Amino acid sequence: MKSYVVGGAVRDALLGLPVKDHDHVVVGATPDQMVALGYRPVGKDFPVFLHPATQEEYALARTERKTAPGYKGFVFHTAPEVTLEQDLVRRDLTINAIARAEDGTLTDPFGGQRDLADKIFRHVSEAFAEDPVRILRVARFAARYPDFRVAPETNALMRQMVAHGEVDALVAERVWQELSRGLMEQRPSRMLEVLRDCGALARILPELDVLWGVPQPEKWHPEIDTGVHILQVIDCAARAQLELPTRVACLLHDLGKGVTPSASWPAHHGHEALGVKLVEQVCKRLRVPTDCRDLALMTAREHGNVGRALQLRPNTVVKLLERCDAFRKPARFVQMLRATECDSRGRTGPSASYHDAPFPQGAYLETAMAAARAVNAGEIAQTCRDQPQRIPEYVHRARVTAVRLALGAADGADDTAMADHGNHGDHDA
Image (tube, rainbow, N blue to C red; front, side, top):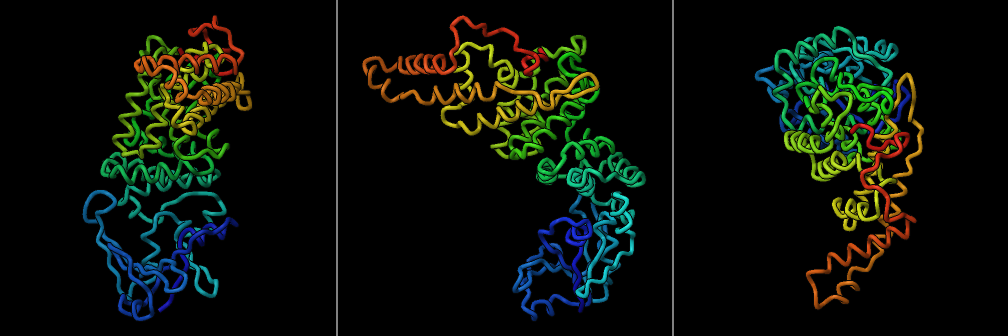
């Protein structure tokens, strides 16, 4: 019986990166022997055990055989005679098929160390094509290790998998799991680029995929292409280390531009309202968690209004706060402001860059929200007990007054005025 550290722990150690978890493969053992040594069985599909002291996972060396479409369509075989090399050959990428023995010796039968040095994602064997989740994993790894590239033969294999419908067999929960993890990596734009390059994005997120090739006004969007804009926006969110719901909002905020009339391009009048329906569609299909869904819907609907906040009257600002439920959920409103800030700064092309542009709308609306939230609705309700039906009206008026004083805003400001385009107003309308 021998055990080896395998997979990500070996890969990241060789890259000089922090190692979080250790996975182990055990050769030459039976389940009964593992239990006798104090290991606790936890695997459902194949024998996996937790070490009695470290609680790290130890899996018996195994082979696998494809029996049905999708990522669950496998039969696994474990036995003491299964070799380390037989176990490693079923893994996805060469860089994940390196094993380290207890004495530190490396077993690398597929050139994983060479591909680490060359920064290449390369599949171990043709068995890669049997599991569509591996396409999502490669894309996620690209977001984590943005300097790596997909080997041409691996990309060709992924394209073939997409053409054969393997990606269509993925369940929503697994797609969301991998996408959400990729969004939280160092450069999430790389995940989208890899998925697009092999054709998988069109199957997983067609509402997003159609944005590539959709033009925007160069004056306000020097990157022009809406898909390129999305890549810049989600990378901005990653640089700011924003939480997952905000990154999802960044990813989905401009879906409406994919369905605006092409005759009107590069303008996108009404894309916010069109986008709301598409965000609902995506979140329902992928079973996106409620917090991510609600923030994405709000951002799609309101990012244009936030962009022109400096031109809105106090009354309209308060209506925006009310519509976004900012009085009960101020933290979520701030998340939307952060997503819109990334939308503003994700506009970089040959002619100009807004990468470091100021975004005063954020502080402006946070000041307005603080002032409006300071209004004591309870006291107002007490003063109009004889007219309870008018309480919402009086509370709203008090909030408008508070916002006007806090912002030094004039009553005559134009609700419909276009914002300063340099500060990312409603330049897409």
